[in-house]
Image (cartoon, rainbow, N blue to C red; front, side):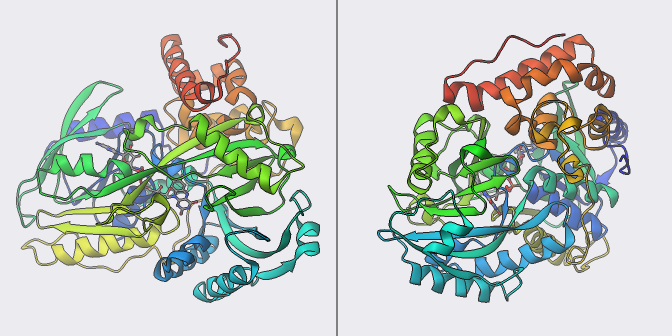
Length: 536
Ligand SMILES: Cc1cc2nc3c(=O)[nH]c(=O)nc-3n(C[C@H](O)[C@H](O)[C@H](O)COP(=O)(O)OP(=O)(O)OC[C@H]3O[C@@H](n4cnc5c(N)ncnc54)[C@H](O)[C@@H]3O)c2cc1C
């Protein structure tokens, strides 16, 4: 089980102390942002021999990268916007991830139904899916298939049949976005990257235009409440929706880059919405494409797409979005009338989209990524998709190495091609891989199918620093367990306190912060209350 090296509060502490005690240490590269983009850049860079430091102000993937629809997909809906290059890139990367990270990314069957008055008629869907298969170079497990009404209802009996003309069956991919991010981080560490969570880039002093003198960066460790300075010759900004804020800190001139849109999801027990396929739905009110996605013993419905300029830390679903998502399920699954009281959990994220020159509707903005270089050795990588993270990272490090090759003292060993195209991802402790064994559960749902030893191993090899890290991003307990796992806490208190060397006050602090996470994402939007404080 614990085949991975220690990656824990203790290793973090040691690494920070090492940096504090060696102020003359110079990194080739500082990556700011431990979402999927920054994690992949650190992995690619360290595999090419760059001495790399990554800092993430929260937990790894705690920004957008744990709040996606968890699909590794080509994006059928982008065909309507003629984004063929993006679909080609995404389907190529999808096939690669199926091969290189089979324990984290797997194919799932989709059905895209069409009704008499649907915005997209069946013939158009069929034409689109031909194009999808072609752009994917036929790398799906099977080609798409057109089903007429009877076959559709046989394959997906929960769906409503009134006015149904047929549907298209096709394949896309599903993943665990947080763990995929973590797998990138763990592999980067294996190649020498120092990756620090809960370390914030506070300020920076960029020194030269040609990599001659290293830049200085002031970092804050909020756990010890200590600031320290590190040096690096180049910087990659991978700040997702925080990109504009970070660019402001560089002191260089950048145009405002981001147009962030909020996307929200709800999670319900599978028996309330027993879909067998992921269903692609055009919303009955505005015609947008959204999905119901089977998720083990649960079903996810999402997503919305609404411009939102609030600080990313405050993103959460609201009551209108809950109604909007439920309305779509009532249309497609009329025999399964979903209610807000069926919802077990929700999540929301901000899409770090690149602002177009003209104003466009949220769903029309391209999901392409944007890469920008400054002579000081600063690269900005923003936008894009979870699906295309590997390729985005490859392009980022290519650009950095090419530009730095003209410096008097180039970075690393000069230009070396990326090594990630054929490199498998490390497998992580993922208890669901054991299959579903109800009696092995700590709680009631599949997400709590963990022994106390599993929990301990996750804490010490996957950098857990809080209950939220463990329940939201290492396991799916927050999403799937009744009361978001609140009632499990007394059972695991001793194990967690031992593994993380917490005293009672540390425990109480983490408990309060987890409660606040549940309040923001579930209790307030759904007008609910938690049972009493679990202390014993
Ligand atoms: C609702 C929704 C659904 C989506 N669904 C899909 C999907 O199904 N498939 C797909 O391919 N893509 C999907 N996406 C897109 C995908 O999730 C994002 O493109 C991707 O996660 C962005 O990752 P990132 O690393 O660029 O940003 P983030 O994950 O946000 O990472 C940026 C990180 O920078 C850190 N940071 C910021 N400031 C500092 C600082 N000063 N110091 C240190 N760290 C800092 C933040 O804490 C954050 O963790 C979806 C997005 C949303 C919102």
